[in-house]
Image 1: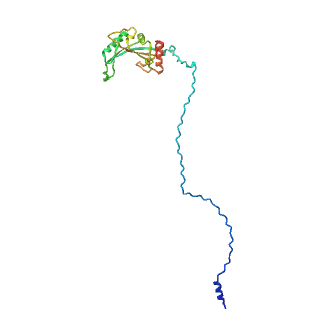
Image 2: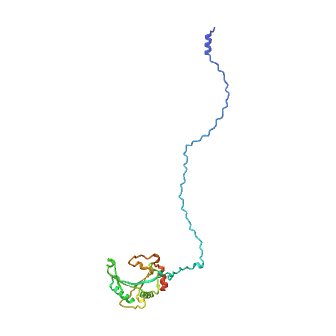
Image 3: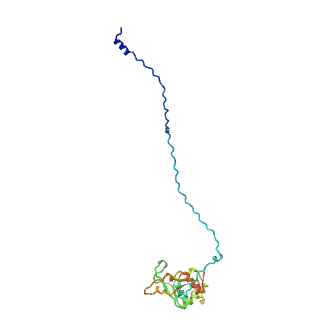
Length: 254
């Protein structure tokens, strides 16, 4: 007979029969596909930045204006109105003096001939001019006679000037006039002067003439007390001097 204890031990030693469990398929939810960025092992190409070019200089084309032919009336040159000095006596121009000079340098014989020539032309004894500077290369020293000159005023100046201008055929160049009322011109041969004959002792030589023009009121620059300068509006310009010689002396300026 089997006792209770044995039966109990047998039950413990016998394996328990497992109940078969039916595997029921479970519907799994489809997993959402998440887009994954593909990591490329290649290096990304470097974009080249275009260099900024300097702006080209704009070439400005000159504007060519159409040529308009002037009318016949406009082609005529408008002459400037001549000044009437009779209405303003202070602007009237006159001949202040005429100076004749001959330069001889260190040649004493030439200076003596010049003195004789100026006396023959004017009838007045000229004076000697002396140097004021020392120039060793030219052989000059202060006080050395280098020429002769004579200054004429009044009617004698007008008379001699008319003869000198005849030697120039009454023609002067614009370069003979300056902006201070002075007129300078030269005569190559003294035999061209009317009334002067050839002298064998003098030979062939020339001289220089200078005409000084003035207006009333120029005395203020020579007076001893309160000496002043002549105002620019009162000075004799080149145009004024040319107008004076053409109107008063009938000289052509070419």
